[in-house]
Image 1 (cartoon, rainbow over the protein chains, first blue to last red):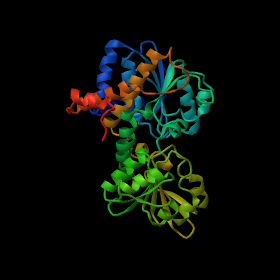
Image 2: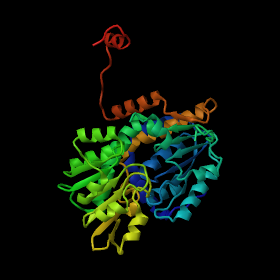
Image 3: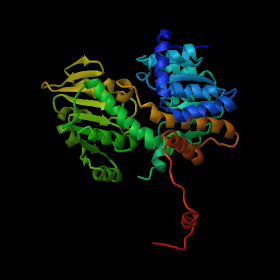
Image 4: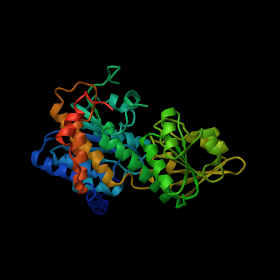
Length: 159
Length: 258
């Protein structure tokens, strides 16, 4: 399994923070439990571009519980929590490519690394720059998008 | 992209789910943005003038929480309806040109570029604090700030002080990147619980339905949205009422009016 995180030795610190976050995430926990039993995502590769935080880690583990192989990169070079990135990479078998404060080149290299997994599905906040999606005709089934789509928003917003 | 026919696969716009934007964008951004500003600056908000640029769900949340901390909030908007809503929610509404002269804090939450520009920096008070909690690091025109500054230094973690001609100082938080994620820890888990429940269930939905979905933008199915709200309520130990058969019938009829 490939990954690129700041320091795998931070994994234990991240694990405690993840446990703390999960205490406030009962809905995701219940989905996690059902996914574990039903495996609705079995055999699928999911590429996620999100802020690599404890909450995102909880999502990654839920998708994994559903049977998916999960690839994760940061949607912002400053938002990565290095400890939880280490937890995912070292203890949870998630291919994480994210380092807090990474330069622009590394940031895009990480996005490419995740898209190279040829995902069935992408999940995330826009993959920072349509170019990147354009150069990777990747998502085979579809995408779940977390931030507003500007054009779409303009259309449906009642204001 | 869908309209131009260049979208190659279906997209579920999770942000449009009620259990996402009404909570994550409003309460999540509201709390975590104020949290980021406080952690970065350790300044007191009470009694200050706090400008919120943009009154979408994120702006509503930031304004609401800044008011709660005792700040005098000024909202800037380009949309008359949202501006009116901001006024009736108890905020002052002004053009940014005017607000720029009197504010202590500025937060951009517009989703657009170069909201705070050179002309605003030039009229700001000494010590003004500028932060972004919207889209990327483009809402504040940082290149313009760099261009007009005569000096800059990192005065504390997440705070860069720019000195302008004449000696006034402007403090930029977290390089203009999302202050809630850079200087604090992002949205609290409890609200991301709902956003990511949407992501997880949307992923399951796409995988089940991908053969019938076209390359287009879809909403999260209403049942998923309701299920998440119901699960969240249950986890909070909160129960709600049901319609009586008489009420069901009334809602389904057109004969009776007001």
